Image (tube, rainbow, N blue to C red; front, top):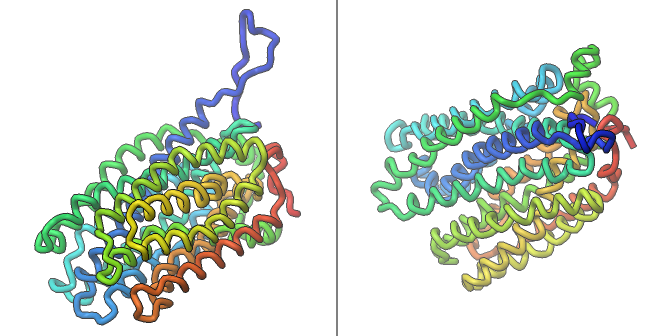
Length: 445
């Protein structure tokens, strides 16, 4: 077991040693803050791509909304490359160093997006710069959650791995909430302010979260399991080659399981753009509050799902959440199409806080447990980022599937549910690992 122990003294002498959770709590907190920054940055971009960037960066295009949503997806093209590079060094030199690098990359790219002049000012150079910064965000995100999941799992005591690892994804929800709260007053600004300098404020504000997360991350220690391998010269020279040779089946499983992220991007990006069109007519502020409510409830439900997963296993909850999301996506879009605001809130909470929250909370431990320490960072990073590519372009694909009819949501729901079913089938073929000791994880099946 990687977690260190505290040996009782005095009256407790002779009793079983209790796990010392100091390191894993620090790792989970750091993972939470880092993930919150990463996904605050990602979600303010998502909100801006849906509401702002069509006007600022694509003013003369007849397909401004589609082009803007496509820039959101560009990051997901860069993410597999970032996963290979960052995964390699994460498995070679350590989790902590790469996690510091990803934090700085994301913060710098986000701040610089807020500095890009509009297309009216510098022409085609504006969207080019936007895409370049978006690529930098994608490379950064490729290594963040993978490193956080690996490090937290390797510090966690047996029987609580899913719970501690779930805080990485709780950081994602917190970032979503923070981004939505910041965009509420921004979206209410007059157009002459909003489309000139108002939209830039959330991007510049990310520096505050960056400083807090960086300070916490400096205090991290590498897991004992990893340092033991370094000291014994057992670290893989080419982790990606070892991964493909020894864990190819689990890598494919993770890629397919990662399709569950389609639910998140369809909800957060496409759903926002769809609901706020003139044809549907839901106010921007209403949809931002919908996102806040759904993710706020998920902050409670995700740790609860993770605790249950530590009791009964990863597979049943992961599969159940994926299949529930496949069904409830129709309920959510149907509620938006009806214009019934209370129903939209209930459907969003059901989709994101109940069903999607289950696989979202469990995947950091579920995927991490499919790989051994030598290739864990690379395995999670490459597997998730290749799978997430579909999620990244899902909003743009959904927009294209509507075929010009701004109320035709059914093809988008079908796309989402098919991704969820593929995810569930892949999870069904995986080995149940919730009771497997850390040193025995990653045996190919």
